[in-house]
Image 1: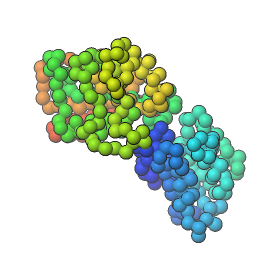
Image 2: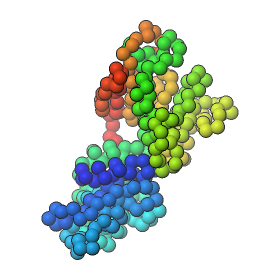
Image 3: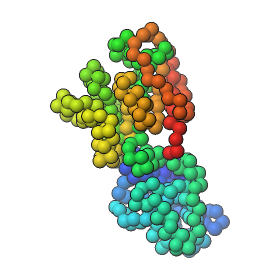
Image 4: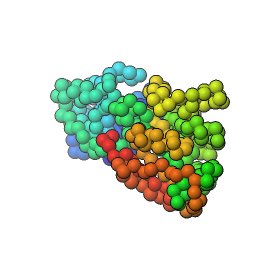
Length: 321
């Protein structure tokens, strides 16, 4: 299953909005016969590519084989035929599934189909790791909203500006990391006050080219405002958080970065509408300004890294993903 997870990660950018999935087929004595991952939305799923990689000489071994899959095999006809039927047709003896699929058209149906065919199915191997890998997909289909990352930079004494004046606390390198983050997520939003004061570009220009399935190297850009006519081309207005969530659902945007001022960030925290926080702290003080948002209590530290003197901490909201 660990190999399945590594394979699945190879489709990180091009598989969305589909989940990342890896599959490994082993013989009765444990030798790997084939493996694959879902490389691009609309192309063959991990199971298809895994079976396709089995050599003609090893195909007679399939009836005694085990297929490991990080996510439940699909059971419906979409852009490709159902993988559960493919597994049944290949006559494998056993299937080990990392985690069930929350997608409404699957949700246990793939597992049920395999068991109906007499295949020995084990579910829940490295389940936490499999769910974490596809946390954006799981959040979108389970909670009906994108996976939300709150991001801000602050001074060592806890302010996000210098006495009300916009201040850059990031370094050139940590700015590059921000642009890498933007290139990997589906959408980004700032509040109306931040837009009026700074009119940020909200793109990923410092990261360079990034092969995304949608052909873009930047997230869809939103501003929380009731005045859409004030926004230039390429920016999209959302009247409030509810409207923003509705637009993300319609457009199948599975992840959202929230940048901006304290009021916008705090509103997501107070509404418990977030999944991850990324806080960058510079070693200098301002002595006053707009206080940084309050760090919620129900979070756990994911990582802490020093970058050019700044400290970047990532936290995850404590929940069942």
